[in-house]
Length: 146
Length: 446
Ligand SMILES: Cc1cc2nc3c(=O)[nH]c(=O)nc-3n(C[C@H](O)[C@H](O)[C@H](O)COP(=O)(O)O)c2cc1C
Image (cartoon, rainbow over all chains, first blue to last red; front, side, top):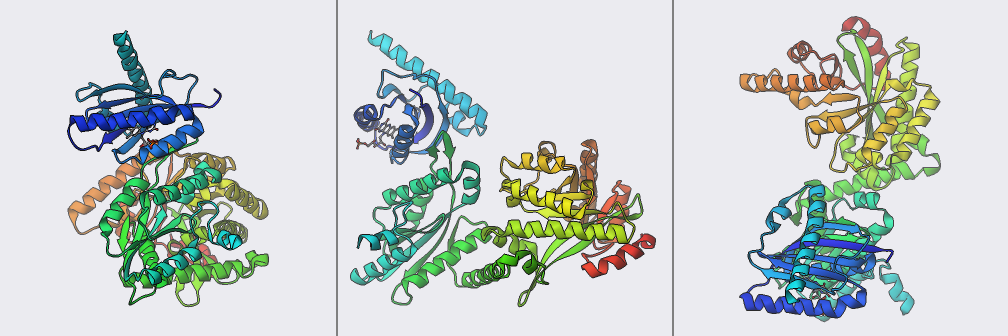
């Protein structure tokens, strides 16, 4: 694909209620993603960790723009910080409409620290790290499933 | 009917335009017997700058996306329309709670836009009023909300609730804008002559060299002689000139006139090294091609030596990424560039190394305290002043000390090593006709 872009962001969860409620909302997010993303040629991964969402979406630029506009207007999260939005040579999650990298309250990734980093270069760097981190998680999960 | 609708809908955002929006609201007020309404007008802060930095088509896209967001978030609004440019108006039933709308508005508008590989975060200013519709018309209420927005803009507020006095301020500003437009446009085929009529003039304030014991140069200060308001200072009309798009013409005139005047004094008074300092606004530096062009023309038509021109810039929030390159181009023409008002507002020490400047003007606020009766204050001012001179010297920058008003201030800055000095102690800004006299007699007076 000529016009491949990747966008990664983190956002604060605003879903209220217990763990079950959270799970069911995340299910519904994934359901939407599985339905809509293939139509737009979008792939990616989503992580829920310590009160934050962290997502990577990849696809054609126009489609990333429209999907991101939809996602970020979603009431289930707020305080969105885009880490990077850049052209890319290949997809990291080509097999996944939206891989769930994990739902974990104790994930060791320092999302809070990331969000507070005001430095754009550091932010881009973190964006890249996050993509790798999610790739790792997704691969591990897949291996575990055998 | 279709044609009629088309005329009423803003083609870019597909929202109603101002005229049609007002009409819709007025109809709704009648049919639904609405007795009170919240009118919220919002403006995207510094949208012009965003537009300059990302280009018009992307800026249009952001406006379209903003309109979509507003429609999506506020599906319960009575009406949402685009008033003009980057201004939108939202009208809600007055029985509902206002605060929640404002919070929601700020939250959603300030979420990032991802467009063409760029992330753009907007901020908005909001003016609002809750109107009792039995007592005032909708149009009237909208004007009140707009006056509140204007007040917010002038006072650096994010949100401003209408109060009656804001109408006066808005009216005065409006008058300035109108008159300025008239002064500049009424005679557009002969714009230069229109400006050169006595309405606009340049006052010149001498800059004295302590070491050379002479007048080293002059600073050109633009003034507007308004028939009712009297002399209007640049701080009160430059932003208007920028808004209505005449700053380039006005700026070009100042450059041309100041250079020509200076050359004339150099020749007639035998002061070949007399320099001229000319201020340019931050906006002129964003798309600097026009400025550079005007500067080249001023140099050519006056035959002034370029190194005798000092372009003075003031740091501002509006400083775009393109500014250092623009300044570099000014330098390559052989001119000097001075950072004005150093030590106040947005200027920072870091900027001294990142901007290609040759000169530094120390702000008057530092000088004011130098001979303060309060010993602690004057000691501190002295330490800061010494520090600034030291940094500037270390970086090889020329320092011009502004705002010297008393003999004791002069004594202190001289002791600290200041050479170039400007201020009321030597002279206030002078009219063209007073300059010759001053320059002739200054030879003995300093
Ligand atoms: C953190 C987060 C990530 C989301 N990711 C996607 C996504 O990748 N694709 C998608 O279609 N919707 C996603 N959504 C949901 C959208 O905001 C929106 O609810 C959905 O697209 C509505 O589509 P539907 O009505 O077709 O289900 C996400 C929501 C959140 C809060």
